[in-house]
Image 1 (cartoon, rainbow, N blue to C red):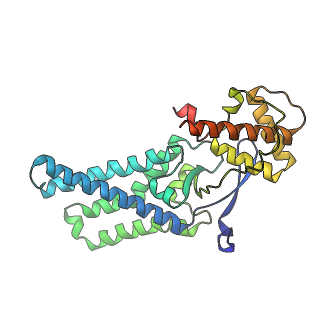
Image 2 (cartoon, rainbow, N blue to C red):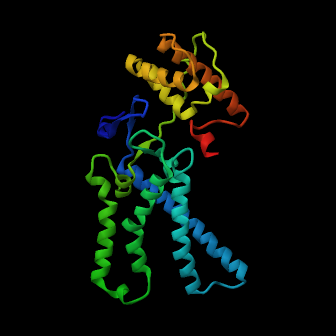
Image 3 (cartoon, rainbow, N blue to C red):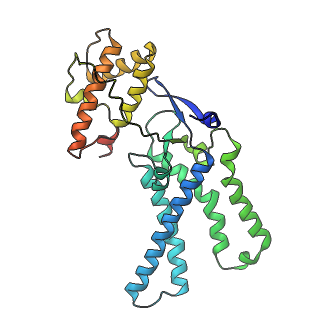
Length: 280
């Protein structure tokens, strides 16, 4: 990683006690992702306006277009960010294009309440004052109100620049991070050795591809404490006996899980993470 980005490196300890290293998304990348999402939302709204005119057989009146854009934008932008970030990838199309995703800062599962909270705060940060400015009425011509509303929005838009974790106010409240979603091929060298242990379906159901990448980091680091914690967690959940060889156990488990995920992917039944079954 470039030296300029090392200030965004963070260490995350999972609930299992495993230390993982990750990189936060920079302010520029987050702003670009957000602008891309807004652009996509505008495309949807324009398409809806055209469809409304086509269905009505006439050009929609100005008031109808204003109502459509105010209500449609409110419902669409909240549904857009919340539903996409609740998905398996934890990212909107804009974030995915820029290689970003949302995670919980405590390493636990990203909860629905956290996603709703971080996106609901955006209404207060940005859209509430801008909506007031867009409405007809005396306040529209009030220069003091306009300046205050724009200043309010600018303050919250610049908020990530004034904290080391590049957090929005919504991230502070929800306990979330926006991190780089680094996609790399799984290490074939880690599963190259012949396996000495066999695992049942119940044991392999414990992890998905997301956790497999974390397991790869643990195996590469080969820290005895981390190996013991992860191996103990898997054994306890799968009801397996402790044979005293944590590295060998995890290497065999890694190889078996890689093979299983590849088979399922060829059948169109890939598993993104260990919570996918619960979501379904």
